[in-house]
Length: 187
Image 1 (cartoon, rainbow, N blue to C red):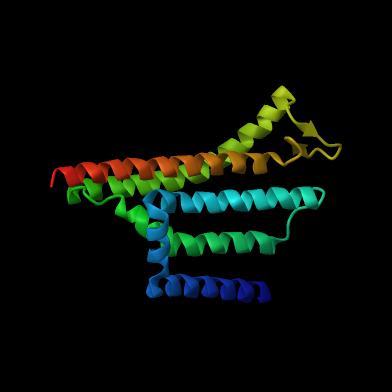
Image 2: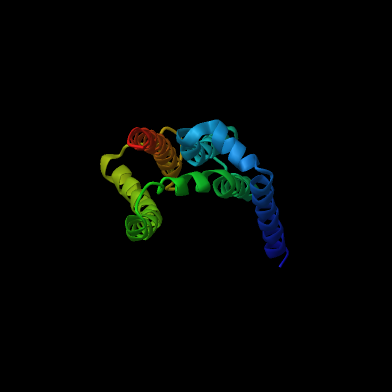
């Protein structure tokens, strides 16, 4: 019960932080300061920084797993920035489309992205494990734990995905910027 109460307090604190950022206009200020490309890349960049922090922890802790509080702080910080800053900008990507196109495409994209993310993460973790077994790439300790360049394979996978996600988000922002310029020309 004490763990549930603690998590509830953390959730309330992050919800209040989201409200304060949105109500004060600070979320919009951050989004405006970063621009559309920067704001779209903000969440994957924060995730990348979190993964790098976990990698640093892994090195400094001689391979010991980090405290769960670190995971909780990273996740809640990402959630606050996502809801207060990044999500409104992502929603603005649909601007300029007809209502029919928006209502047909948005649920498909949202569902596909969310389902693909969970399913592909499980598949990729399993594929990396099998790849290490087949190619003998990396190192296997006496206790059966595997590592790539001294890091757990899942951590390496997370680094790759976070970098890819950041690049794709920046490119999406660039594409939207070009679309906005074209729309201004035709007005």
